[in-house]
Image 1 (cartoon, rainbow over the protein chains, first blue to last red):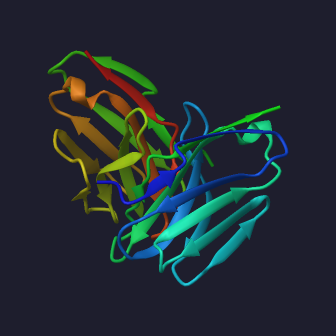
Image 2 (cartoon, helix red, strand yellow):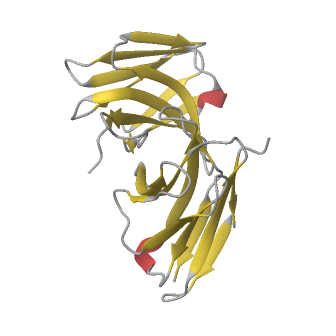
Length: 112
Length: 111
């Protein structure tokens, strides 16, 4: 079973708009990570947030983590056409020895 | 640095054939992983190797075997391919327990 569930499954926005996607998980985690996958490519790591952190920024990305609700959100500000991709959350649960469980992803399309 | 490399990029097999997917990393990482990705789904862990000389099952290990040949290389073998193993296979590595670095994937079709 998949640990992370993402919402929405798909998102279509115009350039310049913000994109927000959410991830919920079921068991206690060590950290939560977000990855991007361009069509037909491997995954690229975007950002990692640890269980004792509440918010993290990286460029146009902002990630929040609410461990009481077992949820996280990824915000991409001022979207560009190059942000078109699938975004996955991945959770490293306690004592997982680095193993990650991935959600099904959010497919984001940014139109010029 | 090439990062994580995978061969082959594409492969078509007939049911019952065997093959080995190769993965190598040049980042001196300790841990390596094999995932499969099916349409509309996230990645599911097949096997992993926390360090050289050790391997363990992941979420979907049936029908697969692995070998951690050395610190650089981690191969995935399908002994008798089945259509249900049609998927895209990704290898990944990590120095510790955090960020994973992914290869470009192998697209496998089993007829």
